[in-house]
Every structure is written in C-alpha cells, then in structure tokens.
Length: 199
Image (cartoon, rainbow, N blue to C red; front, side):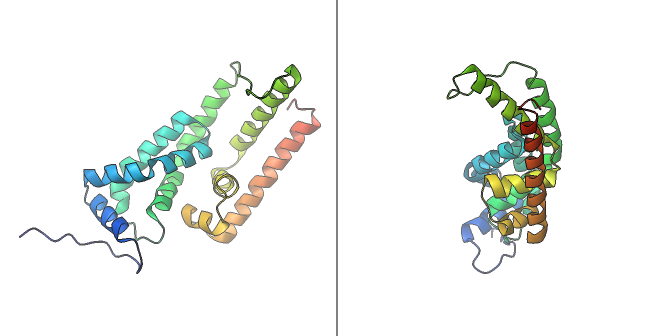
C-alpha cells in the first residue's frame, strides 16, 4: 500500500489545488516546484524589478525565492495566497539585491544614457535625464522597509492592509512607512527642483 501524504493544515475555504501544491512542495516534489514557478514567477519578477529597479538583480532574486521555496513551504499555512507568500519571501531576500542594484546603477549612470523616445528637444532630453537620476537617487536612499511600502502601495496600488500582510507587519506600520517614503521622495524632488534640475 502506498504511503498516505498528509496535507498541511489550512484554513477552511483554502484553495484545494494550492493546498495540494504546497504539500508537494514541502516534500521536495520537483514537478510541484516547476508548477509553482510557471504559475507565479512572472508576478514575483515584476515585483522584484519594481523593488530593486534592476533586471539582473531582480532575476537573481526570483531564483533565490524559488530555490528556497520547498523549505519555506513547510511553514506555509495558507493565511495568504501562495503568490503573496512568494512576494513576502522576495522581500526577505531583497536586502543584498537592493545594495547590489544601487551599486550597479551608480556605475551605469556614469555612462551615456539614451533619451526616452518621446523626448525630442535637447532641453527636454537633459531635463528628463536629470529627473530620472534624481528619482533613482531618492529611491536608493530609502530604507528597505520604506521602499517595500512604496512599491507595494504606490506602484502596485495594493491596500495598506494587503501590503502589511505581505511584508509581515501591521497596517499601522505599513502606513507610517509609506508616509515616510513619500515625504523623503518629496523632499528629494523639491531639492532637485530648487536647484533648477541640477541636483
């Protein structure tokens, strides 16, 4: 008789297919890992790229998340959808990648940048480049928790409740982090504007 595979406990109403997928992941089923990757890798990649603003670092982050998933699946209890759990894992793995992306961008900024296609005049091209550098620099200065809050709430347009659940914090903390991120970005861009776009 084949051994019976015990499914992890899950709240009532949890998606049966997800419960089964997580159970298979937690015992190291390679087919389950391929299935999870196929279903969720693009969403994790989009989030990672928004967080680190660097395609190479985002790809590395996605790889780390899915390599770690079988072990992490053992503690997954279906309080949130699997995709949100994976994004939470990406946040936990992100600190090194944020620093690496910042270093890489600073090196790239020393090279000539291509203007955006819709920007046509020399003055507009220069202004566009300067604003882009100011935004990237301002984002680079945010602590990771504020950057996560800004990406989840402002860019991905999630509610603070959903963002807090993903990041493993409270709604109140998430709101405070988002407020501080917005204030820091406003100050940075105000300084850029006051200096005539030459910050």
